[in-house]
Image (cartoon, rainbow, N blue to C red; front, top):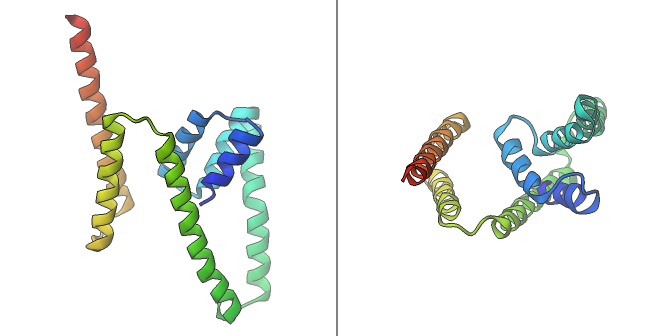
Length: 168
């Protein structure tokens, strides 16, 4: 949900990374464990200052949230039972959905307008929709393995077509 905020800060304001790098970071961060903001911060920190930058950026991203949640857990045992907090979290869920939709629309606008990326996007959307509508129980690891096999197959097919054309 923070993709658009990260993009605005890292690409447009600070110009630490390019738009293409942001798209790559987003894809990599989505496929690795952990929140996307932490994965992006680690990448940008590494790109700017190496391992030290990666560690500092990761700590800088994790520490404030950790401290806040730690303090909340110490002092409020029944935090989510407070009505206004429960309602606030319901509103946050809606806001997160809207931010995710906004990031998806931005990425669609910036993606290559070639048949293969468009076909992959449509297939991924339809598969996600079918999984949700029919409540299929597929683990995210299974989905990532399927995506890896499809990507590798497309890469090999595309690579063999390029070599065949070059040999002629």
